[in-house]
Image 1: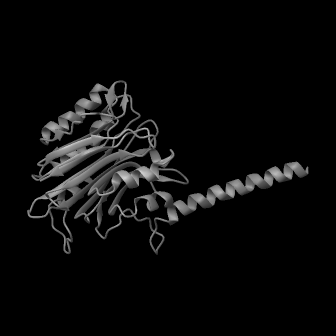
Image 2: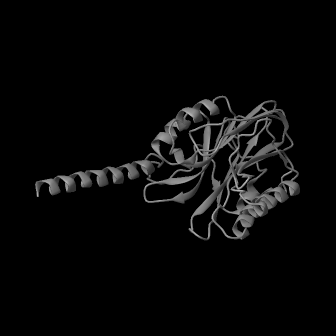
Image 3: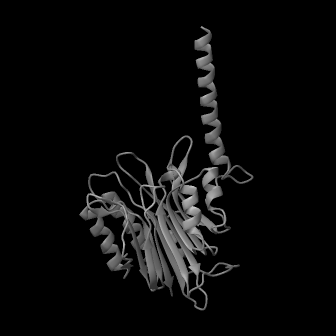
Length: 289
């Protein structure tokens, strides 16, 4: 009986630790009114296609510092929810000195918040939520965004949302603005209807934007139909894909999952890095307006 009681006691402690850990995950990202905060800046967040479309190109008061148009360091990476060893070290090292860091499967945990401190202003778009964890896409930027839009599309099998974040930034020496789209593509579907809907959101929002664009993320393009949909968007918006001399991007069924496209920007250099801290490898570029 004593052994059973000890096991019950230990189990109770484990459950308590799990519950308190889950609460801490969310409390670390709440304001003084216990409301979840999805941005490390003071801009309002648009949460639908029409509102996002209408906000792009509108200059808010107190716009603040702009990105250096002559040198924009960029990185894109799915970090697998920080589940593998050394992800904190890698995100700090690989993100150091970058002006824009786009993360998929970013996670609302205190250790993630600590890892990205010093990488700039953060803009988070929530996706999947469990009882103890919230994940989504996050864009870190050296300059405060002018606009943030949070969108999501639900996967039909699991009913879980995949997130899209759209942010806009001023550029030094020009009246042009840079729009940055960070996508975690819908994954678990038999057809491509939901993936098409997610991509069409981006098409509708950016249809009138005439300035430079970065479109990047983990698009889950593991079949040709998916890749064709993404490439059709790129053609419609005059986006050019980044290419890599040594390409370490993750592949499934022979198709690459992660992509970066640009418009209105010169590409000075590109790079991919093989890492063990995620099942995706980061890609980076140095861009110039």
